[in-house]
Image (cartoon, rainbow, N blue to C red; front, side):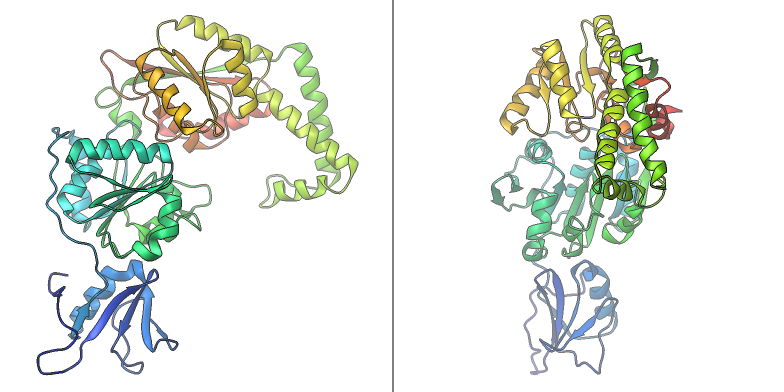
Length: 472
């Protein structure tokens, strides 16, 4: 790219016109090249409306190289990002071996690619080193406003510079800017030319149909993806090869435990229902399964669950089956004997910070009320959530109960015990919950309890979500 002069005029000195490459509404536009001549590089389509060639913005690096190689006289107006010499002057540390290796692998991959490291292994410091190394205006994309705030604080401390924000009511672009995925997807068609490096935190979100626009409409030649669990149930993690780049480095929880991460232990405890809950569970499950079989629905099929929901809407019998399904599921996930064991386990850890995870807000609030401990759900206001997390870190609160909202990204290094009362069959969710307690501390040994209802559908769910080497 250095062979392209960024400030070339639109014409040569002898008056010969140059082709002009520009960024327009999330795409690249090439003018000055005739339709019959063709445009060098992948992705070009002739747009007769503007009498110019058009290509996806994410192809910028490829098409620019192809146009230069073709010998075309070109003026590049697409690039609006600039170089900078920001250095980490605040939080500079000697990187761990795996962090240095990850940065080197990313550099060898042309500064494009995905780095897979477990929670607590310092992915954000790898990102800071990449920002310093690349020296281009940078956008960091994160899934939540909480994470945006956390990243802004870390980057301000590292670089001693104001950090821009997109999302949560903010629209301020700086040399380093942090955005939510939602805001990046919305604004990239206008801002996609302003960043030379884009870092996608929790990169497994990116292949979604909306969020991928944050990558497709950006010209950034340098891209870094960060994730602890890039695999997706729909298999679309393969799209990351184009959206960011291939996986260039990976280390697992087991490889880093005891050195970079805390040592840990996982205890799966089978809990039998009491007779009353078991009778209600079996009755509800019989109603639900009977309806499924009478309708010939294969729940394991591609559209099984959708077909079940459609069938339940057509009759009173179907509506009873749906209600029975919800009841048997709720009892399998949270019942009286599970709660009794939960309270016993809390008594065994009187001096440790404990996170309790369940699957629904109703259970969160019930446990919170029973234990007189704080709760965080998606309904918790941002200001209140931050105050609760602050008090957990300080030790004012010892126990925190939550559903899914803390699965990802929130930093609670002081927590050493997690109790999973209920969850989905997602491997990612299970690994993320383990990751919440793995940040290293002096003498820390993390302990994850998984409470599973014996002789119920939850046993199969538990087996499915433990299909990860961290649990082998």
